[in-house]
Length: 375
Image (cartoon, rainbow, N blue to C red; front, top):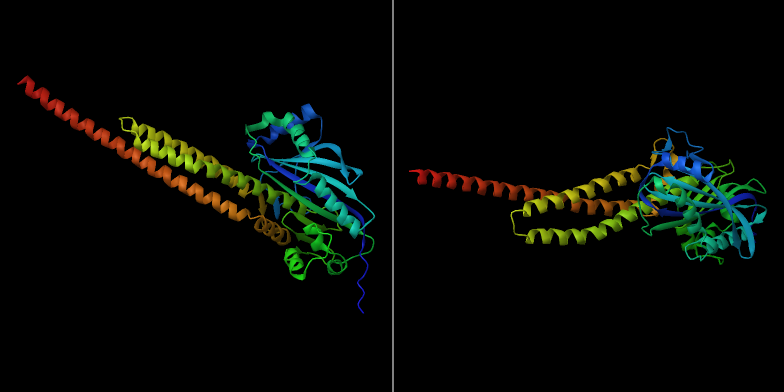
Protein backbone atom coordinates (compact mmCIF):
# COMPACT_ATOMS: atom_id res chain seq x y z
CA UNK A 1 0.00 0.00 0.00
CA UNK A 2 1.44 3.38 -1.10
CA UNK A 3 1.59 5.95 1.68
CA UNK A 4 1.87 9.57 0.55
CA UNK A 5 4.88 11.37 2.08
CA UNK A 6 4.02 14.06 4.61
CA UNK A 7 3.64 17.62 3.35
CA UNK A 8 6.65 19.85 4.05
CA UNK A 9 6.58 22.72 6.52
CA UNK A 10 7.05 26.24 5.15
CA UNK A 11 9.78 27.83 7.25
CA UNK A 12 9.95 31.13 5.36
CA UNK A 13 7.88 32.67 2.62
CA UNK A 14 5.52 35.46 1.62
CA UNK A 15 2.01 35.94 0.37
CA UNK A 16 1.95 38.74 -2.21
CA UNK A 17 -1.23 40.54 -3.28
CA UNK A 18 -1.12 42.84 -6.32
CA UNK A 19 -3.67 45.41 -7.46
CA UNK A 20 -3.05 47.46 -10.60
CA UNK A 21 -4.80 50.70 -11.60
CA UNK A 22 -4.78 52.81 -14.73
CA UNK A 23 -4.38 56.37 -13.36
CA UNK A 24 -3.16 58.64 -16.19
CA UNK A 25 -2.21 58.95 -19.83
CA UNK A 26 1.46 59.09 -18.82
CA UNK A 27 3.56 59.80 -15.72
CA UNK A 28 6.79 61.81 -15.40
CA UNK A 29 8.75 59.41 -13.18
CA UNK A 30 11.55 61.86 -12.36
CA UNK A 31 9.05 64.44 -11.15
CA UNK A 32 7.10 61.79 -9.25
CA UNK A 33 10.28 60.72 -7.43
CA UNK A 34 11.05 64.32 -6.48
CA UNK A 35 7.50 64.90 -5.23
CA UNK A 36 7.56 61.71 -3.17
CA UNK A 37 10.86 62.61 -1.54
CA UNK A 38 9.77 66.18 -0.83
CA UNK A 39 6.25 65.56 0.48
CA UNK A 40 5.96 61.97 1.64
CA UNK A 41 9.47 61.58 2.99
CA UNK A 42 9.43 57.92 1.96
CA UNK A 43 11.93 55.89 0.02
CA UNK A 44 11.74 55.85 -3.76
CA UNK A 45 13.99 54.26 -6.36
CA UNK A 46 13.90 52.98 -9.89
CA UNK A 47 13.07 49.27 -10.02
CA UNK A 48 15.44 46.81 -11.59
CA UNK A 49 15.23 43.05 -11.88
CA UNK A 50 17.46 41.51 -9.24
CA UNK A 51 18.67 38.17 -10.60
CA UNK A 52 18.61 38.48 -14.39
CA UNK A 53 21.62 40.14 -16.08
CA UNK A 54 20.66 43.61 -17.43
CA UNK A 55 21.51 42.55 -20.99
CA UNK A 56 19.26 39.48 -20.71
CA UNK A 57 16.14 40.97 -19.18
CA UNK A 58 15.42 44.57 -18.21
CA UNK A 59 12.70 47.19 -18.00
CA UNK A 60 12.58 49.44 -21.04
CA UNK A 61 11.88 52.40 -18.73
CA UNK A 62 12.53 51.29 -15.12
CA UNK A 63 9.39 52.02 -13.06
CA UNK A 64 9.50 54.01 -9.84
CA UNK A 65 9.21 51.97 -6.64
CA UNK A 66 7.66 53.80 -3.68
CA UNK A 67 7.80 52.44 -0.14
CA UNK A 68 4.51 52.89 1.72
CA UNK A 69 3.75 52.54 5.43
CA UNK A 70 2.83 49.01 6.48
CA UNK A 71 -0.85 48.19 6.96
CA UNK A 72 -2.74 45.79 9.21
CA UNK A 73 -4.82 43.09 7.53
CA UNK A 74 -7.44 40.97 9.23
CA UNK A 75 -6.95 37.37 8.11
CA UNK A 76 -9.90 35.60 9.62
CA UNK A 77 -9.58 37.20 13.03
CA UNK A 78 -5.78 37.18 12.98
CA UNK A 79 -4.57 40.75 12.38
CA UNK A 80 -1.16 40.68 10.70
CA UNK A 81 1.16 43.39 9.34
CA UNK A 82 1.71 43.68 5.59
CA UNK A 83 4.48 45.67 3.94
CA UNK A 84 3.09 47.94 1.23
CA UNK A 85 4.69 49.42 -1.86
CA UNK A 86 3.71 51.00 -5.17
CA UNK A 87 5.41 50.66 -8.51
CA UNK A 88 4.69 53.55 -10.91
CA UNK A 89 5.02 52.96 -14.65
CA UNK A 90 5.63 55.77 -17.12
CA UNK A 91 2.69 54.71 -19.31
CA UNK A 92 0.23 55.78 -16.62
CA UNK A 93 -0.16 52.77 -14.36
CA UNK A 94 0.17 52.29 -10.59
CA UNK A 95 0.81 48.76 -9.31
CA UNK A 96 0.27 48.36 -5.57
CA UNK A 97 1.47 45.35 -3.59
CA UNK A 98 0.97 43.96 -0.11
CA UNK A 99 3.36 41.34 1.29
CA UNK A 100 2.51 39.17 4.28
CA UNK A 101 5.36 37.13 5.75
CA UNK A 102 4.63 33.49 6.60
CA UNK A 103 6.72 31.09 8.69
CA UNK A 104 6.40 27.67 10.30
CA UNK A 105 3.17 26.71 8.55
CA UNK A 106 2.21 23.34 7.17
CA UNK A 107 0.79 23.23 3.66
CA UNK A 108 -2.84 23.21 4.81
CA UNK A 109 -2.30 26.30 6.97
CA UNK A 110 -0.36 28.00 4.16
CA UNK A 111 -3.24 27.35 1.72
CA UNK A 112 -5.82 28.53 4.23
CA UNK A 113 -3.92 31.76 4.85
CA UNK A 114 -3.59 32.27 1.09
CA UNK A 115 -7.36 31.92 0.62
CA UNK A 116 -8.02 34.17 3.61
CA UNK A 117 -5.80 36.87 2.11
CA UNK A 118 -7.79 36.62 -1.11
CA UNK A 119 -11.03 37.17 0.80
CA UNK A 120 -9.48 40.08 2.72
CA UNK A 121 -7.99 42.06 -0.19
CA UNK A 122 -9.21 40.29 -3.33
CA UNK A 123 -11.69 41.65 -5.90
CA UNK A 124 -14.69 40.75 -3.73
CA UNK A 125 -13.27 42.26 -0.54
CA UNK A 126 -15.08 45.19 1.04
CA UNK A 127 -12.00 46.56 2.84
CA UNK A 128 -10.85 49.89 1.32
CA UNK A 129 -7.15 49.11 1.76
CA UNK A 130 -6.30 49.42 -1.95
CA UNK A 131 -8.16 52.73 -2.40
CA UNK A 132 -6.53 54.13 0.72
CA UNK A 133 -3.07 53.22 -0.59
CA UNK A 134 -3.84 54.57 -4.06
CA UNK A 135 -5.15 57.84 -2.63
CA UNK A 136 -1.99 58.18 -0.54
CA UNK A 137 0.15 57.81 -3.66
CA UNK A 138 -2.05 59.97 -5.88
CA UNK A 139 -2.26 62.82 -3.36
CA UNK A 140 1.52 63.21 -3.50
CA UNK A 141 2.55 62.53 -7.09
CA UNK A 142 -0.58 63.65 -8.99
CA UNK A 143 1.23 66.75 -10.37
CA UNK A 144 3.47 64.32 -12.28
CA UNK A 145 0.44 62.82 -14.07
CA UNK A 146 -0.22 63.76 -17.68
CA UNK A 147 -4.01 63.80 -18.14
CA UNK A 148 -4.94 62.01 -14.91
CA UNK A 149 -8.00 59.85 -15.19
CA UNK A 150 -9.77 57.02 -13.44
CA UNK A 151 -10.90 54.53 -16.05
CA UNK A 152 -12.07 52.03 -13.44
CA UNK A 153 -9.97 49.30 -15.06
CA UNK A 154 -8.13 47.20 -12.48
CA UNK A 155 -6.39 43.84 -12.27
CA UNK A 156 -5.51 41.82 -9.19
CA UNK A 157 -3.19 38.86 -8.65
CA UNK A 158 -1.98 36.67 -5.77
CA UNK A 159 1.41 34.99 -5.45
CA UNK A 160 2.36 32.39 -2.87
CA UNK A 161 6.14 32.49 -2.48
CA UNK A 162 8.07 29.85 -0.51
CA UNK A 163 11.77 30.34 0.16
CA UNK A 164 12.55 27.66 2.73
CA UNK A 165 10.97 24.30 3.58
CA UNK A 166 11.82 22.36 6.70
CA UNK A 167 13.74 19.82 4.61
CA UNK A 168 15.48 20.12 1.23
CA UNK A 169 12.71 19.57 -1.30
CA UNK A 170 12.94 19.13 -5.05
CA UNK A 171 10.28 20.26 -7.52
CA UNK A 172 9.39 16.61 -8.25
CA UNK A 173 8.95 15.86 -4.55
CA UNK A 174 6.86 18.98 -4.10
CA UNK A 175 4.42 17.86 -6.79
CA UNK A 176 3.92 14.59 -4.94
CA UNK A 177 3.66 16.02 -1.43
CA UNK A 178 1.38 19.08 -1.84
CA UNK A 179 -1.73 20.00 -3.83
CA UNK A 180 -0.59 23.01 -5.83
CA UNK A 181 -3.60 22.83 -8.15
CA UNK A 182 -6.03 23.33 -5.26
CA UNK A 183 -3.94 26.30 -4.06
CA UNK A 184 -4.19 27.95 -7.49
CA UNK A 185 -7.92 27.26 -7.71
CA UNK A 186 -8.62 28.47 -4.17
CA UNK A 187 -10.26 25.13 -3.37
CA UNK A 188 -10.07 23.13 -0.16
CA UNK A 189 -11.31 19.87 -1.71
CA UNK A 190 -9.25 17.62 -3.99
CA UNK A 191 -9.66 18.38 -7.69
CA UNK A 192 -10.15 15.91 -10.54
CA UNK A 193 -7.17 14.75 -12.57
CA UNK A 194 -8.33 16.81 -15.55
CA UNK A 195 -8.66 19.99 -13.48
CA UNK A 196 -5.24 19.40 -11.91
CA UNK A 197 -3.69 18.82 -15.33
CA UNK A 198 -5.13 22.09 -16.66
CA UNK A 199 -4.01 24.09 -13.62
CA UNK A 200 -0.48 22.66 -13.56
CA UNK A 201 0.33 22.78 -17.26
CA UNK A 202 2.08 26.15 -16.91
CA UNK A 203 4.76 24.82 -14.57
CA UNK A 204 8.42 25.82 -14.88
CA UNK A 205 11.68 24.83 -13.20
CA UNK A 206 15.23 25.93 -13.92
CA UNK A 207 16.99 23.95 -11.20
CA UNK A 208 15.74 20.74 -9.63
CA UNK A 209 14.75 22.57 -6.46
CA UNK A 210 12.78 25.56 -7.77
CA UNK A 211 9.34 25.87 -9.30
CA UNK A 212 6.92 28.40 -10.76
CA UNK A 213 3.30 27.51 -11.52
CA UNK A 214 1.15 30.16 -13.18
CA UNK A 215 -2.62 30.40 -12.88
CA UNK A 216 -5.16 32.90 -14.18
CA UNK A 217 -5.28 34.94 -10.97
CA UNK A 218 -2.79 33.11 -8.73
CA UNK A 219 0.73 31.77 -8.92
CA UNK A 220 2.92 29.57 -6.74
CA UNK A 221 6.66 30.24 -6.61
CA UNK A 222 9.27 28.11 -4.85
CA UNK A 223 12.60 29.95 -4.93
CA UNK A 224 15.17 28.81 -2.32
CA UNK A 225 17.90 31.13 -3.61
CA UNK A 226 16.31 34.33 -2.34
CA UNK A 227 14.35 36.91 -4.29
CA UNK A 228 13.53 36.08 -7.87
CA UNK A 229 12.24 38.23 -10.70
CA UNK A 230 9.14 36.12 -11.27
CA UNK A 231 6.83 38.35 -9.21
CA UNK A 232 8.03 41.41 -11.16
CA UNK A 233 7.45 39.63 -14.47
CA UNK A 234 3.92 38.66 -13.44
CA UNK A 235 3.27 42.27 -12.45
CA UNK A 236 4.50 43.62 -15.80
CA UNK A 237 2.28 41.17 -17.70
CA UNK A 238 -0.72 42.31 -15.65
CA UNK A 239 0.25 45.96 -16.22
CA UNK A 240 0.26 45.38 -19.96
CA UNK A 241 -3.16 43.74 -19.71
CA UNK A 242 -4.59 46.75 -17.83
CA UNK A 243 -3.27 49.24 -20.37
CA UNK A 244 -4.37 47.29 -23.44
CA UNK A 245 -7.80 46.80 -21.87
CA UNK A 246 -7.98 50.57 -21.34
CA UNK A 247 -7.13 51.34 -24.97
CA UNK A 248 -9.45 48.59 -26.21
CA UNK A 249 -12.36 50.17 -24.31
CA UNK A 250 -11.30 53.67 -25.38
CA UNK A 251 -11.37 52.68 -29.06
CA UNK A 252 -14.62 50.75 -28.57
CA UNK A 253 -16.20 54.01 -27.46
CA UNK A 254 -14.42 56.04 -30.15
CA UNK A 255 -15.49 54.00 -33.19
CA UNK A 256 -19.29 54.66 -32.99
CA UNK A 257 -18.64 58.33 -32.22
CA UNK A 258 -16.25 58.48 -35.19
CA UNK A 259 -18.89 57.03 -37.54
CA UNK A 260 -21.44 59.61 -36.30
CA UNK A 261 -19.01 62.50 -36.83
CA UNK A 262 -18.07 61.27 -40.31
CA UNK A 263 -21.74 60.99 -41.28
CA UNK A 264 -22.45 64.48 -39.94
CA UNK A 265 -19.49 65.87 -41.87
CA UNK A 266 -20.73 64.25 -45.07
CA UNK A 267 -24.18 65.79 -44.58
CA UNK A 268 -22.67 69.25 -44.39
CA UNK A 269 -23.15 71.14 -47.68
CA UNK A 270 -21.11 74.31 -47.67
CA UNK A 271 -17.89 75.82 -48.89
CA UNK A 272 -16.34 74.91 -45.53
CA UNK A 273 -17.25 71.20 -45.62
CA UNK A 274 -13.68 70.33 -46.68
CA UNK A 275 -12.33 72.24 -43.68
CA UNK A 276 -14.64 70.28 -41.36
CA UNK A 277 -13.47 67.02 -42.89
CA UNK A 278 -9.84 68.11 -42.48
CA UNK A 279 -10.40 68.95 -38.79
CA UNK A 280 -11.99 65.54 -38.22
CA UNK A 281 -9.11 63.84 -40.04
CA UNK A 282 -6.61 65.73 -37.89
CA UNK A 283 -8.45 64.66 -34.72
CA UNK A 284 -8.34 61.00 -35.78
CA UNK A 285 -4.67 61.31 -36.72
CA UNK A 286 -3.89 62.70 -33.25
CA UNK A 287 -5.79 59.86 -31.58
CA UNK A 288 -3.97 57.23 -33.65
CA UNK A 289 -0.58 58.83 -32.95
CA UNK A 290 -1.18 59.02 -29.19
CA UNK A 291 -2.54 55.49 -28.82
CA UNK A 292 0.20 54.06 -31.03
CA UNK A 293 2.90 55.79 -28.99
CA UNK A 294 1.53 54.55 -25.67
CA UNK A 295 0.81 51.00 -26.86
CA UNK A 296 4.38 50.74 -28.16
CA UNK A 297 5.60 51.78 -24.70
CA UNK A 298 3.40 49.14 -23.12
CA UNK A 299 4.51 46.51 -25.63
CA UNK A 300 8.16 47.22 -24.86
CA UNK A 301 7.78 47.52 -21.07
CA UNK A 302 10.05 44.52 -20.57
CA UNK A 303 12.99 43.74 -22.85
CA UNK A 304 13.78 40.00 -22.98
CA UNK A 305 16.86 38.81 -24.86
CA UNK A 306 19.02 36.07 -23.34
CA UNK A 307 17.30 34.69 -20.21
CA UNK A 308 15.35 31.82 -21.77
CA UNK A 309 13.82 30.63 -18.48
CA UNK A 310 12.35 33.98 -17.45
CA UNK A 311 11.42 34.69 -21.07
CA UNK A 312 9.30 31.50 -21.11
CA UNK A 313 7.54 32.50 -17.90
CA UNK A 314 6.90 36.00 -19.24
CA UNK A 315 5.61 34.69 -22.57
CA UNK A 316 3.30 32.20 -20.86
CA UNK A 317 2.01 34.87 -18.49
CA UNK A 318 1.18 37.15 -21.43
CA UNK A 319 -0.60 34.30 -23.24
CA UNK A 320 -2.47 33.25 -20.08
CA UNK A 321 -3.68 36.81 -19.43
CA UNK A 322 -4.70 37.15 -23.14
CA UNK A 323 -2.48 40.19 -23.59
CA UNK A 324 -1.66 39.36 -27.27
CA UNK A 325 -5.40 38.98 -28.03
CA UNK A 326 -6.32 42.34 -26.49
CA UNK A 327 -3.29 43.96 -28.16
CA UNK A 328 -4.39 42.57 -31.53
CA UNK A 329 -7.91 43.95 -30.98
CA UNK A 330 -6.43 47.38 -30.27
CA UNK A 331 -4.31 47.14 -33.43
CA UNK A 332 -7.37 46.24 -35.55
CA UNK A 333 -9.36 49.18 -34.23
CA UNK A 334 -6.42 51.51 -34.78
CA UNK A 335 -6.20 50.25 -38.37
CA UNK A 336 -9.90 51.09 -38.90
CA UNK A 337 -9.40 54.61 -37.54
CA UNK A 338 -6.20 55.02 -39.56
CA UNK A 339 -7.99 54.01 -42.77
CA UNK A 340 -10.87 56.38 -41.96
CA UNK A 341 -8.37 59.20 -41.39
CA UNK A 342 -6.74 58.51 -44.76
CA UNK A 343 -10.11 58.44 -46.52
CA UNK A 344 -11.21 61.69 -44.85
CA UNK A 345 -7.92 63.37 -45.71
CA UNK A 346 -8.24 62.32 -49.36
CA UNK A 347 -11.86 63.46 -49.46
CA UNK A 348 -10.98 66.82 -47.90
CA UNK A 349 -8.17 67.25 -50.42
CA UNK A 350 -10.49 66.37 -53.30
CA UNK A 351 -13.12 68.83 -52.09
CA UNK A 352 -10.52 71.58 -51.78
CA UNK A 353 -9.35 70.77 -55.30
CA UNK A 354 -12.91 70.95 -56.60
CA UNK A 355 -13.47 74.33 -54.90
CA UNK A 356 -10.19 75.56 -56.39
CA UNK A 357 -11.21 74.39 -59.87
CA UNK A 358 -14.60 76.10 -59.52
CA UNK A 359 -12.89 79.29 -58.37
CA UNK A 360 -10.53 79.19 -61.36
CA UNK A 361 -13.44 78.66 -63.76
CA UNK A 362 -15.36 81.55 -62.15
CA UNK A 363 -12.32 83.81 -62.45
CA UNK A 364 -11.95 82.92 -66.13
CA UNK A 365 -15.67 83.59 -66.74
CA UNK A 366 -15.37 86.88 -64.85
CA UNK A 367 -12.33 87.90 -66.85
CA UNK A 368 -14.14 87.11 -70.13
CA UNK A 369 -17.23 89.03 -69.01
CA UNK A 370 -15.14 92.06 -68.06
CA UNK A 371 -13.35 91.92 -71.41
CA UNK A 372 -16.67 91.85 -73.24
CA UNK A 373 -18.00 94.76 -71.21
CA UNK A 374 -14.94 96.86 -72.00
CA UNK A 375 -15.53 96.30 -75.73
